[in-house]
Length: 247
Image (cartoon, rainbow, N blue to C red; front, side, top):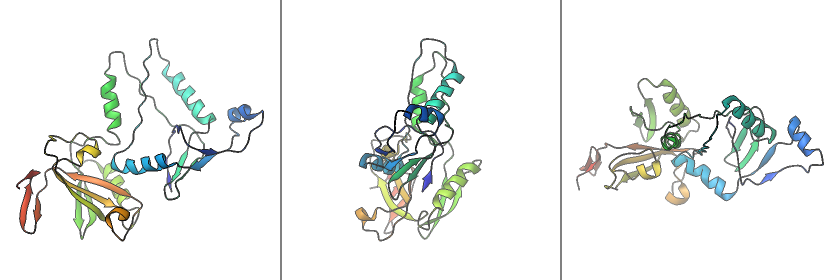
């Protein structure tokens, strides 16, 4: 079970709540409402799997034509999320169930000054969680498993990658290997669904999607990585050098 400690709006989720009487609004305002819980529908379950390929980041932009009271805006957003019971999201991926456990909201609106380029801000947010690194993460492998993570000057990222790969005995095991063949791509842009086609090597660690590949093992996680300047040798013949095809 994975717990996400942040506020999250969830339109379209089928929820199970106890019937309410005439005092429903009063209960909401006093924080005495039932917890929201239910089962993910097919689309939501699919989006969770999609996140393993590229994180889904929802960005909402509002333009105001009058002075903004930022602190007041945050208080109002927090209040609406908390009284609606849309905080403290807990996801059970295995059973495809969710629950909002309540608690304080945790949102931080980004305020842009007049004249700022909103499109650039949206692009940056969509490319999160980390965006594109200037310094690559290096993974050391032995017998198809990650045995070391290196990224000079970024100990926090190294710890997060190590924790992710250690969550299950098979989380650090190579479950997918592919070679990008779209020679029309000239750069990596931060959208993995496109970047994985970039000439180079694409490896995934964790679940091998056995129902599609025939693999006889599983894992609850799946993370993809790219090597854009890879050398590839097949049966003693080099077919790619520094990301450039030789055949």
